[in-house]
Image (cartoon, rainbow, N blue to C red; front, top):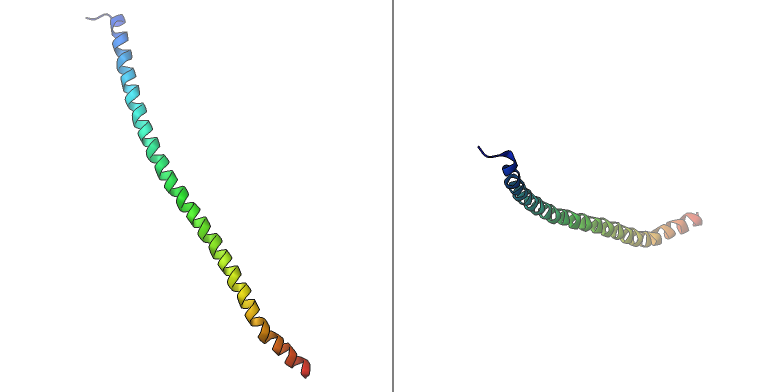
Length: 83
């Protein structure tokens, strides 16, 4: 039977090899998660831009509508003033 002291160095080498393998797997998973996170961040950025554009478009349309309705409102006030 081998002496336990003789088994320490081979066990340590085996543990180091297993650790390196686990670290490589962890790095691969982290890179995959970083890539997915980048996609999510891009989607959020696009969504925020769409919300801003919708708000801006709404303001432009509302402003144009206000300008267009102002003329008939003035005529109605004018007619009401003649009574």
